[in-house]
Length: 317
Picture 1: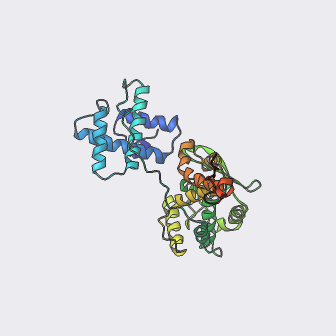
Picture 2: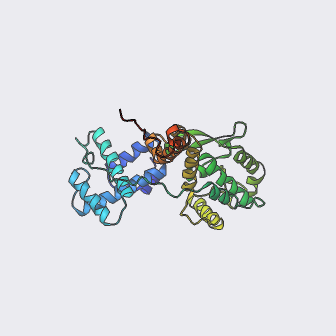
Picture 3: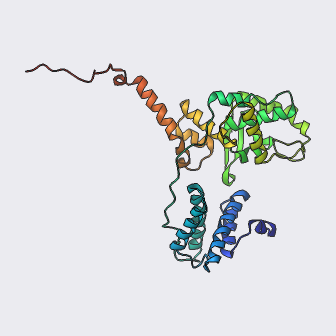
């Protein structure tokens, strides 16, 4: 690991630094993920220092007090769960390496998370959003191709901005996508997205005078940032009259929701989203449940029975 990388992460303790090294080399986590873990552990270390404690001497009570401290600072249950996940991962590694006999974070209960979806666009809203970029300009054509890909393949914005021209196979209409932990998956895209992407590569991309080997470029010929894509989506959403709080991830959620509404099964959606565990996809189960209930109401013979039909009359014997 380079000195620059270590300094960027700001590992507060040799054990933490060794854990981050393990996540990078063995687990293959991205620099963004490593930076997030490092920041979580840095905050935890600062809390321990104030209380004259350390990662070696912390107990389950210490971690519980830390979570209460974060709660008082206004952190949400989701943020607390992420912090606890970082500490669990760190202490599990410390136990595996023989530095500690047991993890003080193992028995701490994870804060309950709300099982809610962020705002999902309707099909009409999605059509309105996709129609906003001006295809007659290089920037507009680029933006339309990006929006179509986000929705056609359910991409994370980090996956979108890291695509290269060679990741698109125009013969099969498939994208090669590198997701979390550099895990590769093949994402099929529909004919319209294929056509837009092929035209962008053939005639539009060169107008940006590429200096980096990424698919979507800014005016300087360099790759777009996640923040730039977020701002573009916010702008087009406002132009389309969409008042929901949306982000690039909203298009990914809309992709999954619309697939399930159309009859796709949860396992297929899991593979298309690149979720390693089906539990990550189960947030969409309410969509599948509503569809199944609709099918049941439409086709079950008793659902069509007239009111009172269940009451059978009997003659007195």
